[in-house]
Length: 377
Image (cartoon, rainbow, N blue to C red; front, side, top):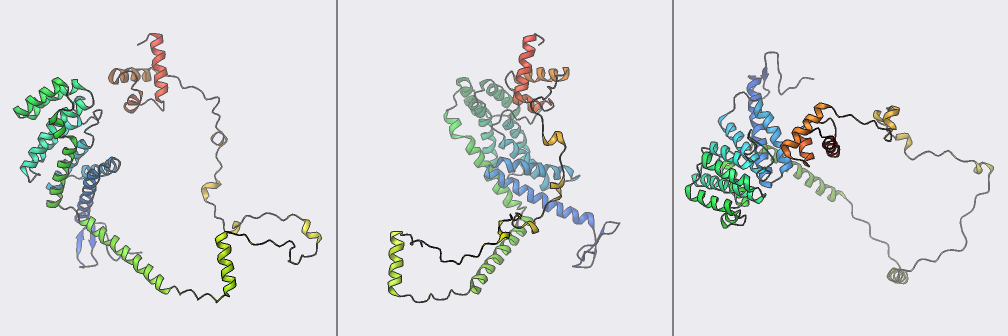
């Protein structure tokens, strides 16, 4: 069946049904991809402002896949890509185990501070840009102290002095906070992490107002509104077509009074002692058992998947006599490397970084105890 709207030939040409002119398919695709990138970026900003980390992460992966596939990005798309890099680091700001740089002592907020420098031109309000920059200085140190890592806080302050060009007054104040390890200092509470999130939200609102990126969003909103209107009209038409119930026949006042009294007192009706139904005469055929047929058996639909018979070993797994998987020297090597990096007892963290072929944290713990007992560490 031929689509009358668009017809694509071998030379990637498109015939529009609206104008009848011939268009280049790559040009049409490029415009459509820009709309999709804009919509995904707007969704990312929405999930960030809601602090919905799960949907933010899944949408970020889709955005990265589309942007990385583009050979040449438009100027506003390049800015949006940098904003997404910044937002992802802010979302992981309090997770010190998340790494965005090669140096494992560079926290997500320290990396966000480096990215924020590239967004100076994208911020129309210079005072807002400077405010977010100072908040990042303070919270880079504050988050480390909040997590109880004073050593990392001291390293972060040294890094800020070299890379971040911290104002001298703020630098002295942060140095005093780090030396005292005072998490409840007035500077940290006044310029809190919540205030940083609110300032970033203000930056996003201003950027989206200047770069709406809402063509697909507005088009989809119109479709949703039209569907809602159709559903409301259908409900109203259905109510108009429903006939009014006929009036109930008049009853004698005595019967009505007896019904009211019985309903109030919750009196059960009297049972009859004898059954007034006529009993059919006994027939020899009634003794035979009828074959049970489930209701709706004639219209029962069975999927094709249900006809597959699993093999014997899959249908009845023998869990009692499961053979143990021997540890290889390569797995022992990975286990030792993981303990050296993350420390003994961080089995789940070691599992996330190294591949042990389906082993769990308990197996790692037992193997490490075995290696210690053998003295092969």
